[in-house]
Length: 356
Image (cartoon, rainbow, N blue to C red; front, top):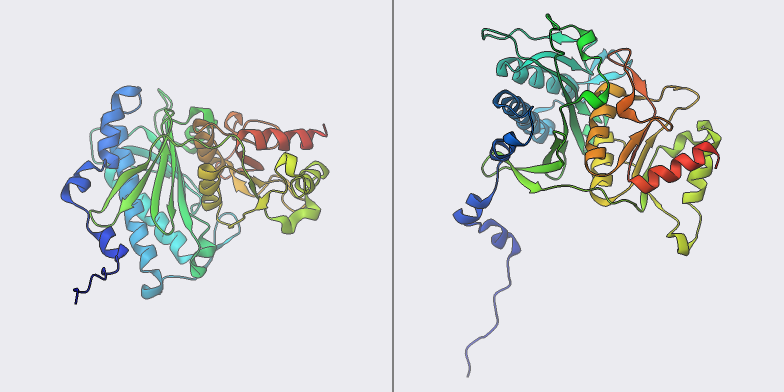
């Protein structure tokens, strides 16, 4: 009788865990990537590299808190209302504190603007001179979704303190988005991914929990010119302007020659919706409504940094009429309507908004 030739079932979980030291050695970390790219443009100096490192360290700490949130019972609200009239979540405040702490310790930042703080935060460093970078951030975008385990994120924007400015003030931060020298976001989801640009393309890094480092996983991200999905809160449909309502109805039309209808994909965490559309193609819209004539998203903390990334990846971003990055801000917490994503979808939206 022949011996049993039945093969043991393949355990894919075992296979995934069998990563050789050579494979780990082939991974390029965020810090290695930054160092390699320092010579490409004038702003990637050692201090700028350290600033990106400080932001990534804070993201790791926030990620740790997120993964243990349910266990440590840090979900829910603080009972306070933030500067935007929104109920503040416990994780909002925790993320804000971690990013401010990391930037303060790093010493490369002279001024912080946070969605969770009513005023700009000046930073005094321990060195001979203050840093000359301004960082604006939404510490935890989509935080109201935390308790239901939906992806949330951090968004950041980096400017230089204008030459000869002197003591950093909030007015120093009121620069149009075209003046950004860096921008990025972190998605805390099934994996934790940091995506950023310095004006030379867009790259993504996934946090490898086995070594505690962000490693290059999405090099040279390009958003598809067209997409098959759109992201909008259609519950506000009746308060949208007529051109937008016509555009939505057009996207829902059954027309195989035009690859219609499109699919609606709306998570409710802006950074998560944007990340999906960036990788797969799509258009995110948060327009003006009867109750929010200026839209709801913040120009400085959300629209500008993600518009910078969208353009660097081959997409675009407008307020429905004007390029987001060319808007001159008047105040730190300014709001704006936003249309952002694949170029052809954005162009089509504009044609409906114009009434073409």
